[in-house]
Image (cartoon, rainbow, N blue to C red; front, side, top):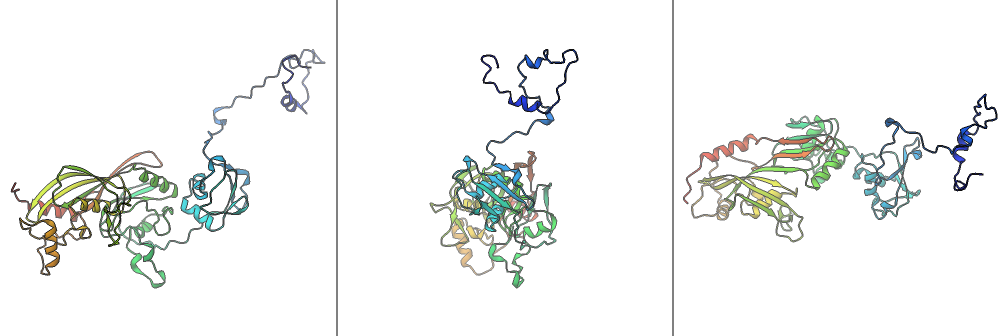
Length: 423
């Protein structure tokens, strides 16, 4: 019997460890009466592990994965713990499989490749916690409609995870969903940035869908400048999170009609679709999405065609037409942006005439108007600067896109037209 105080101590582990092992007897003590094992409590300390043997750290928030459940058919089983309660299935699985985008997870569910406790699953299904989620096979996205085209690209930065491209004005980033009709041989799905990327890069992320491979954010067709492209889904998702969290610094150069009252101003006006003119956005609806633009004056120009202001605009958000509609809200539309109030052509400005009445006269006058030698056939808006932390390497990236030649030439010409201010 064990001594008092030790009677609850189990020696089952020691018994199992020595069971079947032949005892080593001391020739001087053949019966084993002097064996320390009979007189000393066993050493219950586990053997020390070498650094290389230490198990990897466990993330307490990561879903539990049953590795033993992966069979030859490629079926994976995830056990939803209590923290999954109330979460959508697609959102929870996106966290469980960081290398697969939410769009691909939804594709798996729609194809019937996901089961919950052996039954069918829906992407929007709310988990209770404790379910066994089975995923069979890999997602099989439909073939991309966009085709590679040998279009020249100005690549500002590239590595195995992402690239930054200097998009020219006049090029759409990608074709819209309603622009593709392969049966008719529709050419509207040609000449886009996506077509060029598919030719120049072997791999692009599919997280944005089959029409927008690699596209993390967009620029308007007539806006030039730096745009980020992701090559894999994990990088794409992390970049998307960084844009949403406003961790990417985006700075634009714009030339606007008119003179800003202050050298710096912040416009914090929500933006929504114009209900009358559907191609426009507006700041006059109360249900718009928040949008913030920080504007700083770089240069003021007084010319016979009216005053102009060269500005730098840093945007915190990335709403459709954000800079263009915010500049319109200040009464200083971007040069060349006729959708938001800029005149079609530059004409000599009567000293008593405002920009608004000048535009009305230009629109009503059918006679040819005077056009500057360096005519501008696009918006004077350029994405000049990107600054962010590389989502995979942690390296700080600072990328500048030089002002395009047509904008630079127009600005040089306008400077030659300057006149002394009458004030």
